[in-house]
Image 1 (cartoon, rainbow, N blue to C red):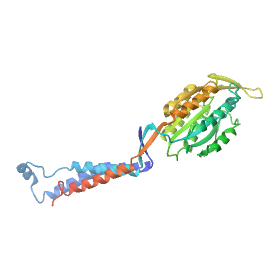
Image 2: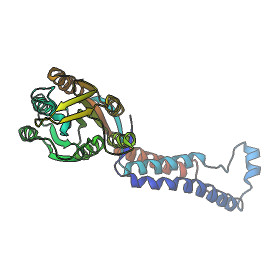
Image 3: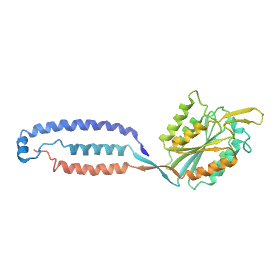
Image 4: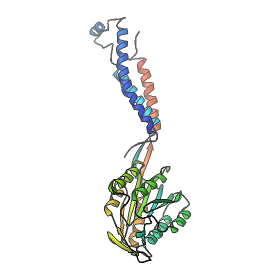
Length: 318
């Protein structure tokens, strides 16, 4: 749960609150001096037992709240919480590095991932938008989010091993998140890989950067680890050995920090089960409630209350 702002630049106006606080007491001091020219309020207070010159703290608090609420309304404040919904948009992120040619799956890891991802589309509800990205040492957008799931399926079947070496998980997360920015539904990335992040010397920090970016935009990530062992050796058709060092800890971290789930797929059945669970669990995600109108309405109500008070109980005389 938390707050987000569609127009965060308006939050700079919060600096006006201390200015209002200081101005209030400065003008109060000036008003008090002016009032003392016409009557001895201190003597009247002793006789009547009433304070005729107050600090108008009630008015100050009301005005502070009015400005605060107006700023929140202008900033497009939204409250995010986790709940159930049948409205989801997905990005399928599939590892296409050379190690995905390992034949511990039928016909190989990439082929199995493509088949199960295609089957996953059949389980989705109508009006769900799905996008497709492939990643190795670089990330490629194969299909922008669309409700035409047949088109997505065609693009999945066309995926092939990428010429770029390595596995850049962080880049895949950031790219997938960017494709979901305009979605008004629950946003989720399904990330499938058999390797660890090899994007640079500070791997942990780079992956965390991707995680933080996804969390900023309330994107849930489901991670699927493909391979029979934590350290797997696959064989490409030419006979060259490819070693994929599977980083289970990183995939758990990505899923746990973004509110998703981690799945370990040792074989085709495990991969199928992972997608079935993702389909069920994806009904729960981050939902938003727009607070802008509520903030504006309360601010207007408080403005009328403040106007009534300064013309009655807190009226300045003469």
